[in-house]
Amino acid sequence: MNITADLPPHPSALLQPDWVKIIRAAASKAEAQGKLLPAQLQLIEEQQWFKLLVPAAYGGLETPLPALVALEESLAWADGSLAWVVTLCCGAGWFGGFLQPQLARQVFSTPLLCLAGSGAATGTATPTAEGYVLNGSWKYASGAHHATHFTANCIFHKNGTPVLTADGQPQILPFIAEKAQVNLVAAWKYIGMMGTGSHAFEMKDVLVSKNHCFKITPDAVVVDSPLYTYPFLQLAEATLAANLSGMALRFIELCKPLLNARKSNSKLNSNQQSVLEAQPETAVALMNDARLHFYKAVKASWLNAAAPELLKAVSITSRHLARTARECVDRLYPYCGLIAAAPDTEINQVWRNLHTASQHSLLTFSE
Image 1 (cartoon, one colour):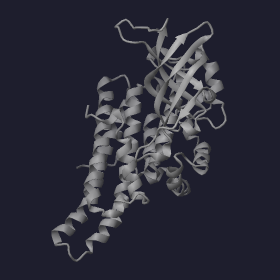
Image 2 (cartoon, one colour; image 1 turned 90 degrees about the horizontal axis):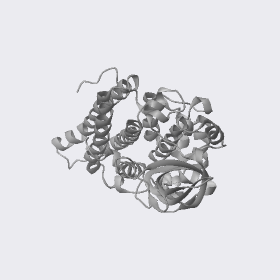
Image 3 (cartoon, rainbow, N blue to C red; image 1 turned 120 degrees about the horizontal axis):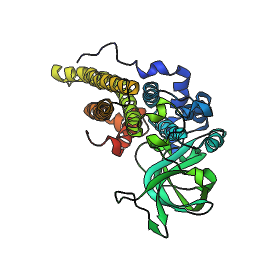
Image 4 (tube, rainbow, N blue to C red; image 1 turned 180 degrees about the vertical axis):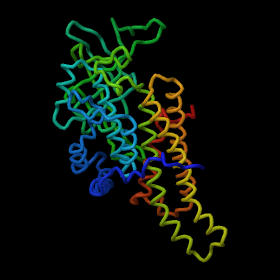
């Protein structure tokens, strides 16, 4: 495997040590409470991480994709739950490039801004003279406890019947609503990513004005910037894969002292000791090879997002990175001993977070 100078730095290079300390010191308690803690949220607010993809015109950071995925990988190395909330909530901020300016300025000037939501079309929108009436329920809204606004996909209805597109499919468009218009439903009961508070939410006969409906198609871009003409699919794939990469790198670090300790066991023969010696280095090499191709693909597509083959490369390398992260961790896990299965240890938390996050449908298949 040829790892060149193009390989991005280790995730620790992008985070100040005191940031990492704040994030990790609260990780276990965030799991117990099912949401990020005030110290973590204060750091996010200070660094404007929820505004990473908000247009600069509205006070956001409008971060280029290569820098975004590198930061999100770093945050996932620090803690998977915090990184996932930042990734999903700042990802919703990307919609700012498509909102009408008057509404966008209102939304993004909100104190302690945080956008949560769902891409599933499990709601309905019925047009009225005043705007739209929204009904439905949506799952997996990461960061729901901290959200000031929610975005949700809805199927257009008229006279109780779905409106169909020209090709006979239900017409689906996203909407944005304020937190006060949404009811949270406690539903996140999975083994990992417990600190994300990725609960469900519902809306019942919620009236929103017409400008709360928007499109994310190329012809609907309001903010003239490369960030908002970059396809949402590859943006989502890349940011999610970067999270898994960061978690896997942290797992490899945490397993090294465990394997070193096991090597001193007199019951192991030389071959077994050699296996323990080689496993972490092999995992690092595999991860760095996958990271190298991933970051090259992201950078190339960012410089020329109009090239279909470059975008396809992002999809392929994102999935490959996600698969490599899972496989490297699973290859190491049996050698770590029972401590890796103890739920009150960081290595087990990382293992649970990675295996929960990797169930995201965008990362399931190779292509």
